[in-house]
Image (tube, rainbow, N blue to C red; front, side):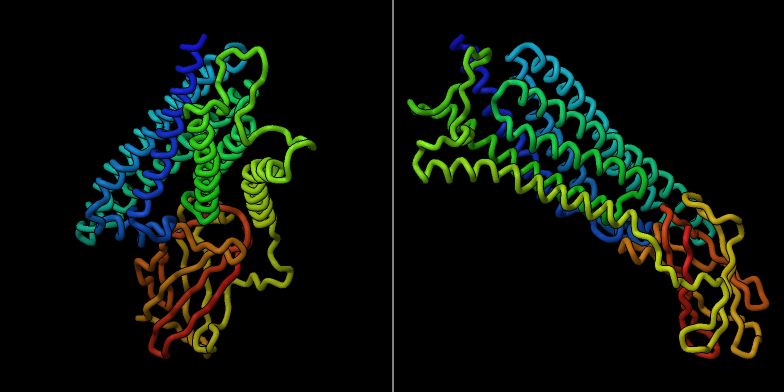
Amino acid sequence: MKNEAFGARTSLGLSASLLLAGQVLYIAVTQFHAGGDANDHHAIFATYAGDDIWAAVHVGQFAAMATFLAGLITLASASRLQGGAAAWLGRFGMGAAAATLALYGTLQAVDGVALKHAVNAWASAPDAEKAARFAVAEGIRWLEWGLRSYQDFMLGLALILVGASLATTGYFRAISYLMALTGIAYLAQGWLAGSEGFSPSQSAAIIAAWVLSLAWMIWLAVITWRMTNPNPVAPSFNPRPTASPIPAGMETPNPQESPMENRKSRWSKMLWIAPAAVLAAGGLAYAAMSMMTPPDDLDLALSKTSAGGTYVTTISPNVEPISVGPIHTWTVELKTADGKPVDGASVAIDGGMPQHGHGLPTAPEVTKSLGEGRYLVEGMKFNMPGWWTIEVEVDGPAGQDETVFNLVL
């Protein structure tokens, strides 16, 4: 029995070290990843093509994730020594963690290798081939969205299962709650990656998961250090306890305890209450943002006079109704204030979602002048329903001006 207890404590210490090392390394390596608006594919692909450390960053991320998951599997293995429900939850958690590693390896092969070759080929392609090369790179990007989505789902499930296995033992119960919250944050990442791509909302979920992970990993490391420290008052981990010894710092406050001991106990609770409150607030903020309704007084006209009164701009989609998801083409028609067609102008397209704080998921551009003041715009896409703006910037014979249109999908 003593050997089992010693082995369990050793496994807990090893798991805490691996988990914390893997998470810190992952966060550190990710800071070197090429940055920008990841959903603006034209701009971000150009950035990726010019990144000379792309492969090294992705290898580092894979090594960090493998270390993190090794720690999670080790933690699940320690919880299996309890027997009963904890053992089964630990086994399922180990399986989910192993599946996560397989999915993450596939993700890094797609993102770290295939996408890099695709964006390099697009950046160096002659003009006649650029559209086709870009389509290939964007297809790989969407495959990355799918892999990232399901990798996050599986990681979230693994954290919830391993956390549940710890909760059934009576040990580290507060830590198990934080692990479950971290798992929920990863489930949210998976949903957002699959539905919005690498949006600001998905980035917020990443930060939430990092903060929660560091909170419970540091707490686990401190407690396991105290358990393995040769100190007569340090708590022990009994694989199959007859009583329920609780690690120091996690006891229920006793009215007979000193004020200092009561304060320590309250701070122990705050360690998991505070991150839980932060995550709940973030979830409520995202839900509120998702349920925002467009202003009632929006001007939805598709033909308007530009801000400075220089041009009359009309936009029209080449497909009706306008749908969420597919890429489609639009036509922009320009006339002077007195109704004459404007040819030979430079036309730029931009836009986004004012209530969500992000731009278009693609970089639409004028690819052809159709004559009579009409211009063909390709690459237009909307990746979610809601209020969108389309900004048409014109630099023509009569000067520069801009028109902003509103769409509600």
